[in-house]
Image (tube, rainbow, N blue to C red; front, side):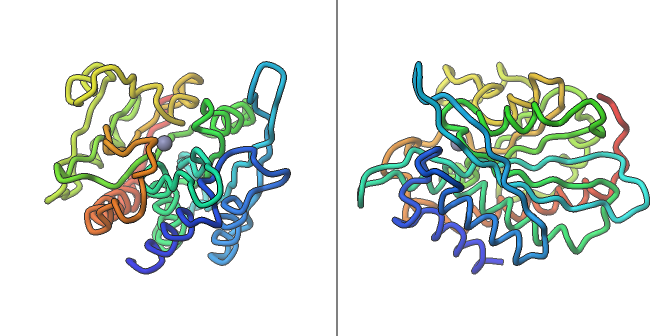
Amino acid sequence: MASQLHTDLQVLTSEAHAGRKAGASEGPNVSAQYIYDRFEKLGYQPKYQPFEFKTGFFSTATGHNVIAKLPCSSTQCDFNIVVTAHYDHLGGQGTSFYAGANDNASGTSTLLFLAKSLQKVKRRHSVTFVATDAEEKGLYGAKHYVSKLGVNTPATLNINLDMLAPNKRNRLYVLHSKKTELAVEVLKKQPSEPLRVKIVNSRYKMQRLMDNPRIDWHKASDHYAFAKENIPYLYFGIGEDKNHHTKRDTLESLDFSRFQLVVKFINNFMVELLNVPLEATN
Ligand SMILES: [Zn+2]
């Protein structure tokens, strides 16, 4: 488990990826290509999903989501579970760039981990992995993905991964929307020690639990794009990080063993979730 996960973190935070700024290159950037190749090596047929987003009053740029689909292993899929993690970050200049290790190389490498591990398990639901772009600029990749879902989309649940490397407090928050009762039941059954998992059903409760009450966690990441279209979500993240959006958010400052606990926890949850019938509630 450790080595590929660590490699993915290393590559995504490397100088070659220059802080993974959205829209900095014409086509898919080096990070999008890396994710695409990783999916392909796992046997998927990944797709780039390009989209335009605003960079100023009169200027736009092109971002690229990277999407891979894992069908269910039964004759009929109950649900489509869309796992999202944004791979973009703030960019930088030359050797001085924002590595974005926790935000969100951690979520992206976890998504790639799941893309491999879930291939081997029984699945009542299909899974779509979406590595989103231009989250930092305004959730543009996720909004574009949701806008293309169409009316005949099967019932969908979003699992959003953004900032998964805990600090000394060992906390992991799971903020969830309404209509997620069955998934939350599964979540509550997962052994989590030594992590301290806080399952939170409202943004206000989340604010009370946090050091910083000013952030609206309901809107803080890609899950909000789903919520706006009444698609239920579970958002996994560690909450406040003192290195957030600073040049200190590096691989060196990320506690890899704690991060692995989170990956294991989310993986166990996903394995179980795929095995449980979910009623179409949306
Ligand atoms: Zn983020």
